[in-house]
Image (cartoon, rainbow, N blue to C red; front, side, top):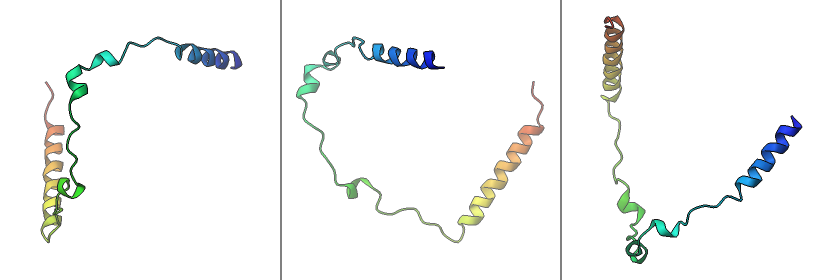
Length: 81
């Protein structure tokens, strides 16, 4: 176990000495000179009114569950060709 640990340790040290391509060439000069995007207040970005539950929400959810269960049963009963 100890030789494996020493090998992995030295392998990680050698990997840290690798040469990487220049990142500066990845973008053009036009992008470097472009202005920063405008910052917006959080209140403008978030929805003002969150969806609310009503008295029919539970029945609608139960109906969706029942439809999905029926569909799953139909798919399991159908033959696979």
